[in-house]
Image (cartoon, rainbow, N blue to C red; front, top):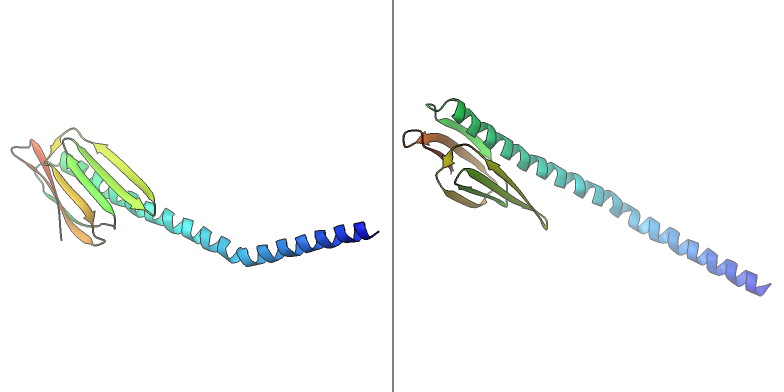
Length: 140
């Protein structure tokens, strides 16, 4: 009989410890979910930047005589490498590194923008050298 009583007490104590553990960790599950949602918003912001830059370059292809000017929001940890006929965009969220490479039919003037600050930049895109190169300039 004491063996059965001991097993019941140990099982009850184990269930009590499990319930206390779940009660103590439950608030952290909401924080983890909010953290994931914030990362998704940040990725959407970066993808919006990539899409706006791509649309701006394509509009210059359609209208080569016009200089494209616009203000564009950049985000922290954004690296932009413009070389050859490619634009390489790198950004880092927490410990994960993301990149996007976009190729075009024309060649660009080579630029490297490292760690653009989280600010609004003036974006200017135009054809130079008798429509042979595209110049993409970010300035404050």
